Amino acid sequence: MEESNWEPKVIGFLCHWCSYAGADLSGSARLEYPHNIRIIRIPCSGRVDPMFILRALQNGVDGVLVSGCHPGDCHYQSGNFHARRKFAVINRLLKYVGIEPERVQFSWVAASEGPKMAQVIGEFVEGVRKVGPNRLFKDEKKDGE
Image (cartoon, rainbow, N blue to C red; front, side, top):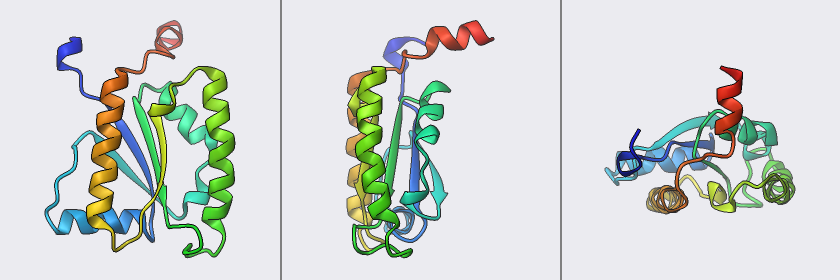
């Protein structure tokens, strides 16, 4: 695909109870956000395994958004606290393996924050667009084909 026609591919792991509901609310309110994101509903942001993020990037996704309930408002009481600790470790791991920090973002969005969810997605996709295509694993993928 030509660089000028390139559009980022983004995966969003969204908490069922808050961020997914916020994305649903933004859709119900007819708020627009980029079509580039493919949303995967998860029970809790604390459920996101760092390998989910690495595997998505390895398979050619340009960016990964993980979003959950605000800390202290988790449906599972402490899941987002676990997520917050994991995110700190994941960020260091990404930096270590040479993945641009703009490719992965973590956010906290409540179910009632539809406009905020649309804004978070829009800003994230635009940030990934500025970074450009994910080429880190490109040669590895060719070798495996």
